[in-house]
Length: 237
Image (cartoon, rainbow, N blue to C red; front, side):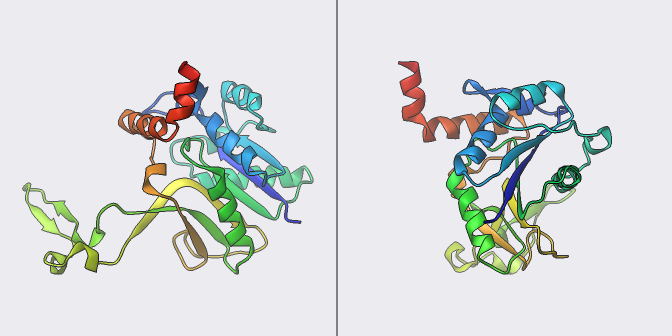
């Protein structure tokens, strides 16, 4: 049976939304939703949070995650990617004698994620020759008809030949949903995530919302409120 681990990067130095990872989101810290989704999936030997922050460490332990180390400062700046953070966590655990077959990198800012998509990502990956799977979603508008605004405030299409084409005649495009990714640790690949060695797990757009700004945060709240209307109403009664 495959051994899986979930690693959630959660540094304490968020700039645009201070203390974002533990900011209250409908009565609970934002990161708690990712932890609970991972636990609900019943896929993981353990759920580990990689953080440089003592307060975050204390809070996530209350929700069932483990914090076996505090992340070093050199991996806690604005430029360190999630991949490097997950690799560091895996190396630390390997040095402790722990070995895993699959790792799931899960973002701390995914309160709309449902555990069934984590399961789908794992099942499709383990039964394939792919190296990775990741959350994706469709673009809301054909990218072939997009344009940029020039320095003199005029328009310039990226693909002018598509101006007169109907939207339904253009190929659908997809983007990273920014919620999770899986890696089969027994395989290697030089391909980028959006390449031939990856399986996209397509989520409906209403379950996808980046949370980088306060406007993003407010939109995530609105989506969560609509999706979980009955549950929220019951708590208020």
